[in-house]
Length: 70
Image 1 (tube, rainbow, N blue to C red):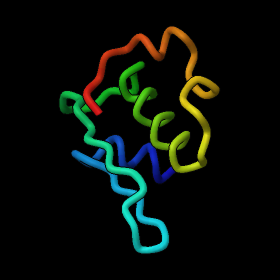
Image 2: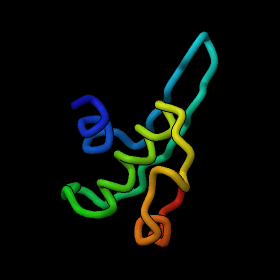
Image 3: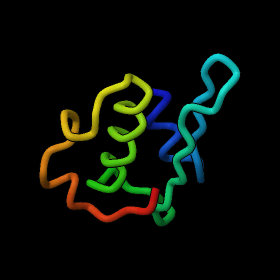
Image 4: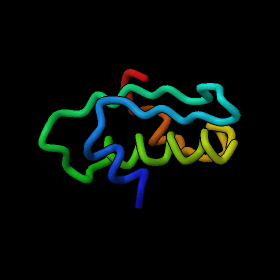
C-alpha cells in the first residue's frame, strides 16, 4: 500500500493534483517506525484528505484526541 510505505519511509507527504499541492503533511514519528496508533493516524489522515473525506466523518473521537504536529 503506497500510503503505508510513505508513512513508514518519508518525513513528509505531498499530494499534487492538477499541478497544485493539495496536501502537505509532515510525518513526525520516531524511527524506526512501528505500526501503532500514531502510524495509523497518519495513514488515515492522508487517505481521508486525498479522498476528500471530512475529518469528523473519518476519525473516531479517540483518534481526534491524539496530538501530532501536522
